[in-house]
Length: 398
Image (tube, rainbow, N blue to C red; front, side, top):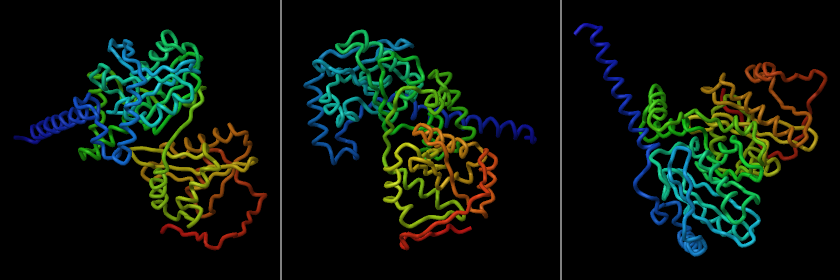
């Protein structure tokens, strides 16, 4: 066998391995699973099992016997449970997460929301529970399903044309945020976005790495191709950040404080980074975020936090702290995108000026701020005074 034949053989074998791996990842991440989730078998629910089972019984007692049905844009029959409320103020549509169901994730909220005076619509997302479908599209097609549920609510349910609120958890959160980019009726008044995630590409790349120990290239391009041909959607087809830039519907974002560890781990990788023992502790950051709940930002790629900014204001001037991007992810516009986000959030709070401190020895940082159009002040002296000597500064090793 000559070298050309060896090369062709190796290429054929590699292509076969990549294709087989891509179909395996596609089947695991995108295809419907036969087994339905059982809350009694989920480890994370065990401490709350008695409460969950009690609330599931309440849901059964209060929901209408007949399920609601719609047809999706691509011909699937989708179903939902409906809990009507007499003299309802409106309807809350709750979208569950990936490989979950409507009577698990929303059990803690349904009675509470109902008691506030709202009817509750609980769809099974396509390829879940009592709804038809073979493929899960991470919100790409589900957003159109949600719009049809909104239109159905306005046309057929008791509180028609009253206020509608959208509530989503995990993949359901992605569905609601993607739906915000569609032409929705004016009576959609708000979105509750609980624990959303990055685009399907990033999620599936993370699954491939963590579960199957597979590198992203060239695997992800093959998975994307299979998704487009077989399931009819692209893994990068919809961008939630781009939708949110144009969105006019109020959104309440909910996330846990587990991000702190990811951000702290990132800080520890930055050479020369100054970390204060009190201000930068979990409690210190939580206190900062409590005073400034909407202005800070993290950037996520490959299933991990790769950038962060702490941003706040005193009512007159905004300030950026701990602006950093993982060294492996620099020169991709992540830093600038985070800064723009913070500035836009400060503008919403009517802050006209924003400042930061960059150490003179930080050549990379100073070049970055100059490159994106910030002005270095030559007419100021910076003073500080230490109020707490226990707030010790430690620098990461160069």
